[in-house]
Image 1 (tube, rainbow, N blue to C red):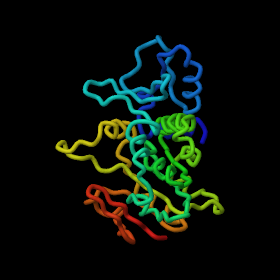
Image 2: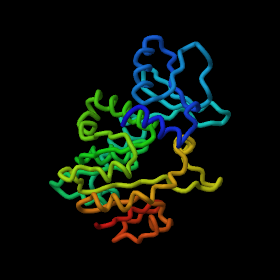
Image 3: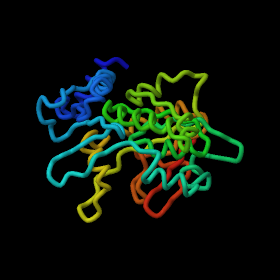
Length: 269
């Protein structure tokens, strides 16, 4: 996708002047400029003016999204080496997990999966860590830039390098990409994890998801992905839903794997 197309896509999701890229490290100015150019983002020369409240910042530890409004959550970054993903990896959570079972993981079988709503990439990385080859689709250029940075750092770390090698990022609109997929490369499964409906004040979503929602909106057109996903997948489409939510796109699944707070609906083509 061209820079012009990315910019047009950004215009439909968030004010293009609301998210710019900058850095506070003099040694990273050239790299930060290249990142801004690659993703069609506005660039703020360090020291020329204070960055707006919502902005991307490149530092020695990678790329992160900042919101400096009062009471805003802390910086958001894609992180596979440490933190929650590092803990999940060290705990050895594998093919008996609900998502793995929903996607049809079996002993000796390494499926090809398309994660059509990649977001922060955590489920995709989990799948890659247990052997799947996963293609991540992400239409928002800011989120895609964060994903690319997280994958780059994961490739550099010996603990995460094997899984990161099994991940491929394809930026662009998922509905379009699914419809243009090469027939010879059809995946075993397509995974959809649309933005869940906002929770009430008594059960606020995690702060990082609030910031992500601020950036990309409510994902209101995600139901349009089910039909092209079913056309593409050779075996199944899996949709992640809140446990008590209605069926995705008002279409009952073939079967479901239900946990306490989440449900994986499985659709067979």
